[in-house]
Each structure stands twice: as C-alpha cells, then as structure tokens.
Amino acid sequence: MWWQYVLVFLGAMLVDIVPLPLPPAFTVMIFFQIYYGLHIWPVIIIGVLGSIAGRTILTLYVARLSDHIFSVAKNEDVRFLGKKLKEKGWKSQALILLYSLMPLPTTPLFIAGGMVRMKTIYIIPPFVIGKFSSDAVAVLLGDYAARNIDTLMRGIVSWESVTGLIIGLTLIFALLYIDWRTLLQDKKFRLKFQIWK
Image (cartoon, rainbow, N blue to C red; front, side):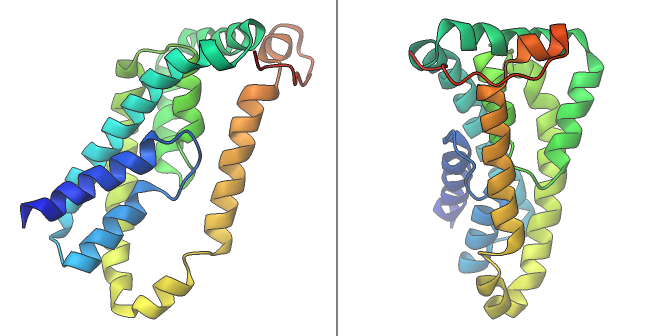
C-alpha cells in the first residue's frame, strides 16, 4: 500500500525536524519496513527523502529562531564559526560527508548550519550522499536483524544509542557554549553561558 511509504517519509522527516538528537531516521525506516513488510529499496529512498526534508526545514527554522532565543553575541559567534567553515571550501563539504557517514546524530550539524545561515545547497549534497549510504547499510542490516526481532527489541536502549545521544547533546552544548571567536582567533578556550536573550 502506498500510504505505508508515506508513513516512512513522514516518520523520517519528523525525527529530523526536531532540534534534539532523537533516534536516527533509519530506525523509523527499519520499523516500518519490518512492521509492514515493505520493500527495502523504496523504504531507503523514501526515508532518506523524508530525512532530507526534515533537515532542510530544521535548518530554515533554526535560522529564523536563533535571532529570537539567542543573544546577539552568541549568534555573531556561531556565524563567525560558519564563516571559517565556508572558507575551507571543499574540505568543509568533505567533513559534512564524513560526519554523515558516521553513526552520529546530524542534528548539531544542521543547527549550526541554520544558525550561521549557511545555504542548504552547501550542506545537503554531502549529507545526501552520506545519509543514503549509511541509512542503506542500516536498513539492510535491520532487515537481517528482523529475523531475530527479540534481540533487536532488547538492543533499542543499548550503549550505542545512549552514546549517540550523549555525543549529540555534547556537540549541541559545544556549539552553543564555546566562545568560537576567541578559540579560533586567539587560540584560547572559553565557555560563555550568557547566550539567551
């Protein structure tokens, strides 16, 4: 049924719209693929499209929201970091690709991209390549694991998922509370907690 694939798209999009590190979109893809017995490749393609839509929306609304919730100094600090990343050219895109291939939450990447008002065309292409590759592997492995559903259900709260959550929250903390201008210009590490309006 076509509506089951719509659920895959919406589920992947919803977990990637939220500005907190939630379980990765591939877990939604695996769930629907197993629950409804869907074909793997359409699930991967539709799920990645949903994930791209979610991350694009996240980047756009964070760009608008950051001016209202963060101080002028914090916004200028993060924009300075973004300017430094843009100066690196293809190296920054290679870093985005590499980051997207790893089993780490991409939420901090898109929050930073939104705050620095980085054009989505700059972030999305390497993200698509990394996301498609890593999600394809995850969904294919999920299909294999479906034969051992009891083991899969016990592994939902595992050291890997807890570690991914901790790393994601740490990266968001670093983005928001490190004084990036001081670190990059003066080579001095400094935390700045007065970031809210």
